[in-house]
Length: 391
Image 1 (cartoon, one colour):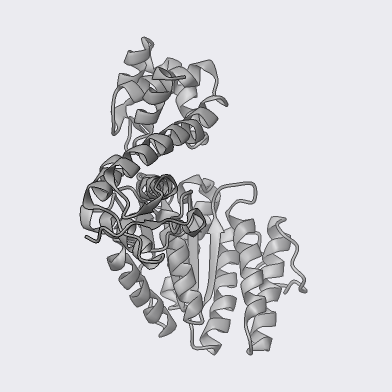
Image 2 (image 1 turned 135 degrees about the horizontal axis):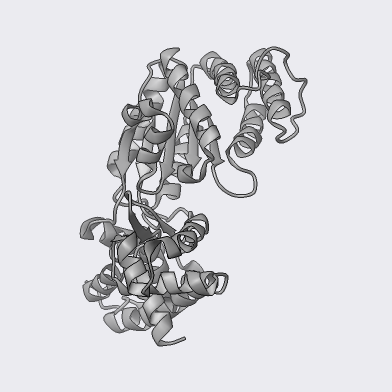
């Protein structure tokens, strides 16, 4: 590796720390992106295919991958929308808002676009969602049965896509947050759309266990999805995620020992890789980036994370919820039985059920399997313990 020293520019930091922010290099997801391209092509040709379900804990890049699929679809000329199942809007309102925006961007096929907008307006009026600047189409999208109305909407948008010889691409994030009635409606509409060979390609994402929850809501869902299970990157992909953006940012190099420190500290999780690599860049003053730069940058980044991802959440919790979080953290990485956590606190499982449920609603923990609980973000336990040791 070159030893020529050259000053680094902090403003040219190429990394993308933060949740849902696309990194400069989407390393380690080539298989999923290739499958997405196949799915989009088949939809455009009128071939029905299984929706894809991205499953993984927080920090593995589910949202980033969803947005990459949407962006690839848009570059190919598809009508591509991204909806959130959580937040103040919720799934239906998020879907309608983004879909109206996308339809108004379509050039040509104006008659079909106007029909699709009128169906969209009818659905919006029926569910009491966003206002759409179009005349609702009576008898289409206004039945009051969300599954029926979503299917009508998918047909109308699919008609626009077919006229353009393109696909209609739907991505949905945080599927585990969707209310059961809306999830049921979406699943039924997608199943019926597949039966009609609409040019619809669907990719959704959620935490582990969402596939079982979907099957509990609609039994056919257990056979409905092709799964993309995301985990941490292997060392080769993780190294690419660190090294290549720096080389592209003016030929900045990393010594192998520094790269190894970042990969080890991150566990290969993309969220941590981006955060740590960015912090090391900001700490280093010249290229190549060395082991001591990595050590200093990691110290700073880990302090920041303990503050930003733990302290900011814990201050909003009740005393009982904080005790639950502390007990789960002390049990170590991975998932643990609800009874284990209760025993660590010194109470019966029933006495912490309400605290566990509130933590699930707050997005701090989730149920990966029946009777088990885990933090939604990998390594969260380490940062809880760090904060407890140095409050």
